[in-house]
Length: 200
Image (cartoon, helix red, strand yellow):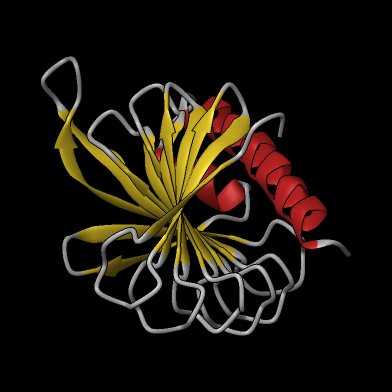
């Protein structure tokens, strides 16, 4: 199954489970409601980990991490801080998400080829729009491409084309098109050559 399709399917299933869980929790007690939904819990230090088996494989494929917090009413509550997902049911995490104090996603890491290495990391602003992406396009787990966004639009791409760990190519974007490209030819981190892209 294609990675992106599996990812979307897992997210959809998790949304359904979350909605069902919320309705059940209103009946209280909360723990009984979770058990009725097949949700298991464990403690890791001060974190409560909820485990879901969304694909009914007999083991967890989604883990939600909550920390103690205070609700709007001033009463003790739990705040979602991280979520992990196993998309191909091999027992290993393929997607990691981190949340801010408003439970908005601020960072997401993806293992796109299921080899245990992160291939893409996305950073989000409070509106849920990407502000930066780090990609390991060679699928070796080490970023070699960085994309920067403003108001959700791509404005710059930096690349390490030689595998040295340093950026050697800069692409500047305007209006959805490459405007110009800067190239570092001697490895000193400074642009030595500009290529103007017109009509691209």
